[in-house]
Image 1 (cartoon, rainbow, N blue to C red):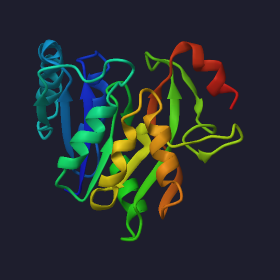
Image 2: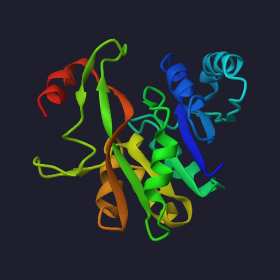
Image 3: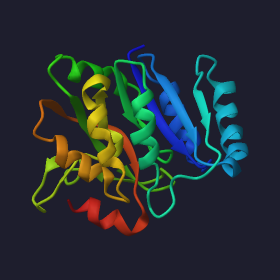
Amino acid sequence: MRTTIITPTTGAPELEFACETVARQTRPCGHLIVIDGEKFIFPAMQIINRVMSEFKDYDPVIIELPFNTGKDKMNGHRIYAGISQLIATEFFSMLDEDNGLKPDWIERMEAAIGDPILYYATCRRQVWSRNLERFIGHDSHESVGANRYGYRLYDTNTWLMRTDLMHKYMPHMIIPQVGDRMLTEQVIELPHAHIIYYGTIYRAPENLYDFFAHN
């Protein structure tokens, strides 16, 4: 096992899909789930236990925080920045609780990052409705690095990072809402691989359906 996936959670129902997509990976990986506050432990564990009962080889590591770190639009950024410092595997990645991965994501991304001089690899996103009943499109706007709108972004859920090289850059995630954009700006010039592989599943808010459908 070469990769650990980090998922912060408040026990939202969407967590079940995220865990299932990790459990279905064609290459073994670790899943470190951080429950972001004491009041979220019960709903989160109900979901995690259901997935564990369905997938016998799925055995996530659970960290329970006594307080919530995602206030003031920080979301899971403080968890990503802090927990990434503790990872023991060669690679790590970030998976929001309301997103998911294609089954071959770990396999494809580990192959992409393969050269030791690379700091990280990124891919692109599939965009779906919140209930996963409607496919909005392939993301050809964000998560492509530089784009015609003048800013640079690889979305949180599209990274696989080399642990020993990326530690010092992860504190750039600790910015409300735009932590992934700030991280991208800091490291986009470093050696990395960006593959045109729509390997992550992003549940878009309804007000962004048209935005992604036309970009």
